[in-house]
Image (cartoon, rainbow over all chains, first blue to last red; front, top):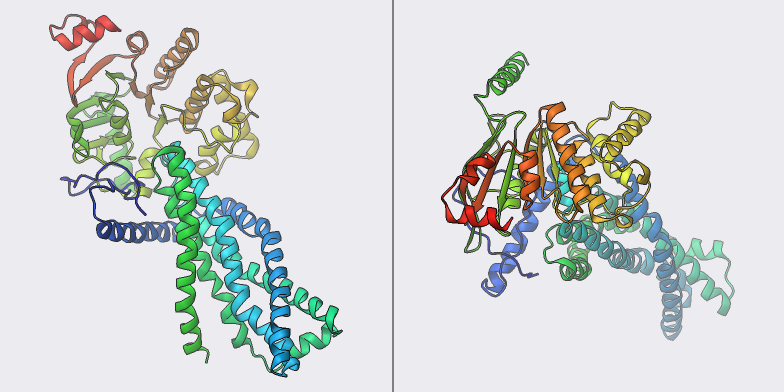
Length: 282
Length: 262
């Protein structure tokens, strides 16, 4: 979380202009890791508040939002579809072997459907999108920051929190559940296909057995929780990108941190959300 | 609404009288760590006037411009635009003031994923939504024509030279017809002919639009050509401010040395 930079001098002016300059990391060698840790979270909080304010006040950047929906959604689709397909085959092979050992082969469709929709689909989608979109956003914004393009946006009287951050974060929030549905569908399809190669089973029978007794509350919260993953991925990537300093090295660091911290916070968010869903949708 | 209108009229009158400068910088201080960049700067620019800010590299000339437009915050002191102190303004309130300011960055800071025409159209797309597409295209062509870049409007910034990027940056800065122009090294890295063309363009804008301009430069010839007044910075302070002749007649060692080396 630490980057080299100037040490922030406490201001003597009580009412300084509020500006884009997100509190940047200070001299790492002079500030203890604990202070650095709290500084990072404090800066993230300020950044989140600025993005929220910008997102809910007009003018809205619809064209940029649509561009970002395409960037995050359409362009991630092949990747999440492939990841889902691979996961379906893996679960199919593993589940068939394990269930056969306990004489519960008839449970295979339900095992596969529940494993994919409740556990693997959301987290795999989140991690794949974090890798692709998080790194891309982090690097793009960091590059814009170090070449003063973000300053130029601000100098053109355009709020960069609204144009750059809010649109990207919202695109992630909206697209993650849809991408998760695509992952789930691909995983179930390839899982069924892998099963059929060993032991023929019609797709209709597979789906019927898989979703037998299932309710919406068993699946919907698990799918829509990925909107929170989208928030985490977009927020971390935009924050890391827009606070970058230090040229090409800073850009690389922002991209890496976007993926590493995004993945970490995504998993931590999942821990919280799984508990929450178990309590709210027992 | 009526009060705001009265204030606007009063502001215009006072600016025309010269009683309120368009840009006023008062006792401005800025430090990065232990390094004091600006140490109590006082400057002002009136309508239709061009101030050239000169000084050695690293004396805070670019920082001064960034403080004026609010991209950086001062440690103390104030910046007033049209008599309004920009301290404490939220980013959207600051945006209203920034619409009146055109800013040319030292390295142009063009959006590298957009073409030259899209770069110039960018402020218009966001702030002149009343303009039709064809009106906007015409305006972009006119602006690019003004800076001598009309033929290259489909190119990306990476496909043109640094000097050309500056011209495009200037066209973008002029897109919203600003009342104030802040130029950070507009002629640095340009050949003498291109420098002369940029100087002529600034003089033309000053004459036609009565803009208040602050030009940060190392180019004494350019400063002498375009500026009404010059301010020489050293060690965070204004060493001397006045016309070129005032600098020539100065007894200050640093001023004499600076003029000798320029």
